[in-house]
Length: 315
Image 1 (cartoon, rainbow, N blue to C red):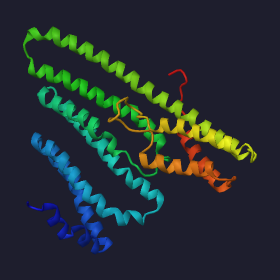
Image 2: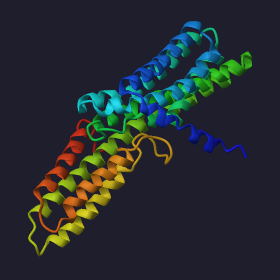
Image 3: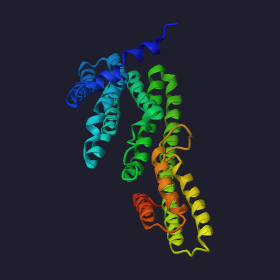
């Protein structure tokens, strides 16, 4: 009836914006990007609860066009600078989570209800969107950091949620008769938090161990394929494909949770597809191709090295 989509397309806003110079796009993006920390600072300085709640979605809405405007400038950066730039959303997310947790701690003595709301917001944000801030670029090079922060971040937000629930119960039930119930809930949730902490860290160690072993198997399969004779090549190719299937299953596993929709994968989907193409090109080559073989081996070695320090065969 209103044809909103057609009218928006007729405005050709993206085309008009891209028509301006790269420096002008960078200037617009800088202004929009600076508004995000300014909004955060205003929320903290004023102490406005409504403003603190509103600045989060507003900050996300400002970040999206900022990143789009910075794309031409980003494409011309050196590779190392691109890696640093794409880590910015993750840094901003960590700062935001720590800010909310700090505000909860300083307001808890005077207002447990508001402090509980902040902690539950931290838990909810990580539950719904936490994995969205993980950089997708340079996935293999960032795998070590991805595995290193998976458990601490997940455990931190779990404890934020548990403490938020306790503080909310304390805020809503101030009757002295409720104190034994609150004590029991504290002990129960504390035990649950400790168990969840141990389970998350054990899960990351198991994933790291499985990833190391299956990556090593893939490397050995490629080496056996490289040294195989023409008569044995088809059998070695079939064995290499089965080895890749096992490795791919590990890459598609969530690192920090057992839920399908929550948690971060070992690698982003695009990175898994890229690695699959690289490996299968080397496997399916009719004869040994040293260039394809070395590309696959190099990527697999980077992935194997990222697991060191977190291997535990008894986890």
